[in-house]
Length: 361
Image (cartoon, rainbow, N blue to C red; front, side, top):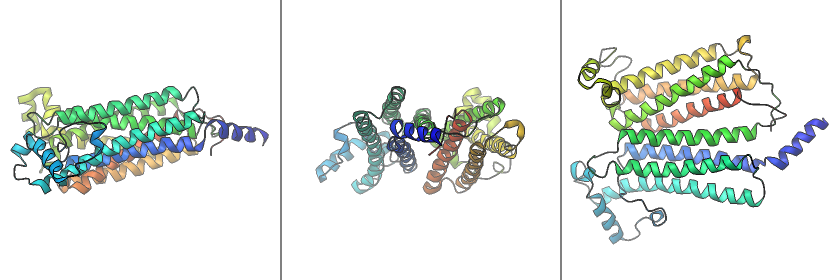
């Protein structure tokens, strides 16, 4: 009892719950940014704001003349000239607000991070070991903002949409930022966890392999979104009656390895095949989770259960999103589902690699 009381005292003085909640709030804002980013992409709103103004861009046009000037900038973009030339001011405003909201939430993340950091720093609640991790978070957030503008720029010169390569980089960095903040928050939350961790090294390596495959799947999800590959072969499980669409070998013959990242049918085939592989591996992990050889504790078993539920939901969301030709609602929910799978796997890895030393709260 005295030992547990010391651990509680150590926790209360060293890791305030408010600090952990602050990091979780950062995770939620990153998640919200990605969801709103998905809406922005699916509604074709991402190129409506043609400039990047960190401070003054916080305020939208407030007068009719301001809206006219903003619309005039958009009218010079290839997207307007080639696709949306029939847009009037009201049409422009309807797409402007999604991109504005996306950027506003990004600024909110910066405000929450800097404001929270200053608060906990002045209260002397940030340890020396946590300080460099917070600095990494700040760099990741700043880098994400730069990548967002770098992505938008690709659609303002010749293209009518952003580069799917830049979209993939922007998206995977958002996932990595979320994962890093979530990992640090989990470590702080469970650093006094008394549950023994004897997980098999083989299982740990297998779970890391799952994360690599999931990261690749997320990248190909961005490729599908950026190239609109979800608008072709809208059947399941076959691709218009074929297990492998006939255009895939034709694209390989014509484009070689470039077809793996450029040809629509190939990109979609890889994405749907990877989904099956991930589902199979995670189901195998769940089926074997109570095998004595793997030596899993109750927290780790529960984390695997959650991961299976997440991949099941995401798998069926992906199928229905494809069958219905990627409507905005399903497309956004599917992207949010990817976050659910990612967060579940990060949580599992955190529990597998944890170093328990006391009690949880």
